[in-house]
Length: 391
Image (spheres, rainbow, N blue to C red):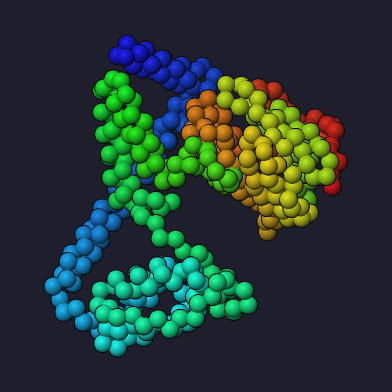
């Protein structure tokens, strides 16, 4: 087992050295690695500061609750009502539809509520410090149909802190520390115990660092918003020209180096082929979901695609006659965030690719030329290519 660990470590070290020492891209990669390290340290320092303040606030709250145990249990009616409202607001989807009054510790609840929320809400109100009795005068409905006070609203779900989508800073620091300890313990032991320690430690550490749910990290579940990024670029050209260029999406492979082919399928649909990790091709079908001339282009991948993605590009005219292009993109790569990070190790990071593509696009429109894949590309060359049939 030790020999295997040594071999894996040696392979990883050699791969990292080759990646950073590449004659063509090594300097840029080292600069990017340095910038990421600086950013990571800044993020960690910020998280540590928040975790410290979070822990101080939790300690004060726990101390206040402890002192409340030894105080007079009969709280002021106004204070008691505020406590009840706070608890109700966390449990029901329409807290504005419920009113509470208090007299000597007896809480009277009136208003409308959905049937499935009654029991949990009453239990929670009875557990509020200072509440001696609860009088239920609520009007219960099986659904919100034709009940104006129950329209809209957001369903509430009582979940433990560990099951929340976003962890608090203190919990992230504690989980990260425990994950790192388990990872270190697993690396020093062999067999099932060592493997279990490595898996548990890596899972906890990844969850703490990314602050994302496990299903998003591994790419399980619906939705395309596992990875999100934004980009804004200013182009010194009329908005009509920039929009027309963007609308001709079949021309993208001529200057977007990660794209191999784009085929127009008609009716706003298209087939995309891109370079994936290790040079492996990745393909998916996409469709336009919105198109406002000189204003907006929106798209999403067709259900079942290997890469799930959606996004929107907005075009705004600058006062000086140029165009501000704002891109917001979401995507869920295979294997979720893990797949995203692994792909970035092989130079297939969509965020950096988009940054580079926008630089080439700006140069192509403003200067009439750029370079892609080591080849000079001119605006005239791009315009001579066959344009897709727009719908």
